Image (cartoon, rainbow, N blue to C red; front, side, top):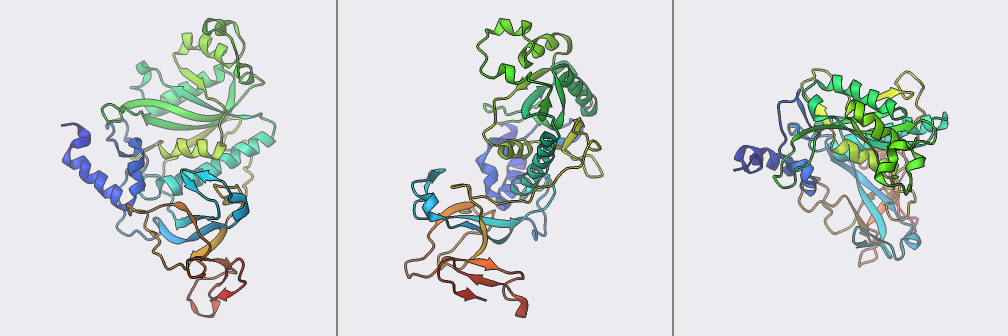
Length: 358
C-alpha cells in the first residue's frame, strides 16, 4: 500500500476535497509529500477551518455582458457566442495553508502584489522581467533552506541576474508513484543585466557552442562547473500574472514558524528597501474578450452552485442574459451597501431594461 492509498491520508484528502473540490484537478494538490524537511509542506495543506466565514464565502458575480465581443469565442471548451461571461466572486483569507483559499485567494492576491513590484522595477529601468528556475544540487539539499538560498542567489549573480523575487518549492511531482519527493528548487521572476537573456532567444547554436557565448546559457554552462546549480531561463511567458499565480499555488510554506512566514522574498535591486512599490488598481477582466467585468447578483430561477466545496461548483461560466420567460438572470450593482439591509441597501439594474430592483 502506498502512502497515497493509506486510510489516514485519504481521510485528510477527503476533508480538503469536501471544502474545495478543485483540489482534485491537479495531482500536486492531492499527492502526499515527503515530510521531515524543516517543516516545509505544499501550500493548501492546512487544517480545514471550523468557522468557514470568510473562507470562500460567496459575495456575488463578476459579469461581462459584451456579447458582440464574445461572438465565436470558445474558452476551455465553452462557447460564449450570444452569452455573457460570469465569474463567481468570493471572500478569501490570507493564509497560504488554508485548503479553501490558497489558490484563488492567497495566491491570486500574492501574484498581484508581486507583479506590481516587478512592474515598478521595470519603470525604474531594470529591464524586462524574466522567469528562471534554480535547482539546488543534490549534495546541498541537506542544508537548511536559509543557507542554500544564499548560495542560489550567489549562483544567479554569476549568471548576470541583478535582482528579483524568489519562491521556494520543496517538492516535485513523481507522477508514477503519485508522491511529492523532496527536491528543493526556486521559481524566480528576475531582471538580467543587459541583453544577456535576449541573446539566447531563438539561438541556433549547437549545445557545445554555448560555453564560448556571453549569453545567459553560456554563463550557465561555465558557472555550473563551479557551483553545480542549474539556472534555467524559461521561455517567454504568455501571461505574467498567470505565471506568478502558478508559481505560488504549488509553492512550499514552512509551518514550523511561530510567526507568519513569507513564501516569496525579494533580493538584489528589488530588495524590500530599494524602492516603493506603485500599487495598481485591481481590475477584473473578462477571460473571453479581455474587457472589464462589473459587479452583479444572480436573480435567475435555475439553481447556481455557490459552494466552492461542491462537486458541481463551476468558478466561471457562460450565461444567458435572460431566461426562457424573458426575465434577467442577473442584475448589475449600482451604488454602495448590501441587499436587504434597511434604507441603505444597494440598488440594482439590468443592463438594458433600465429597471431597478432594491
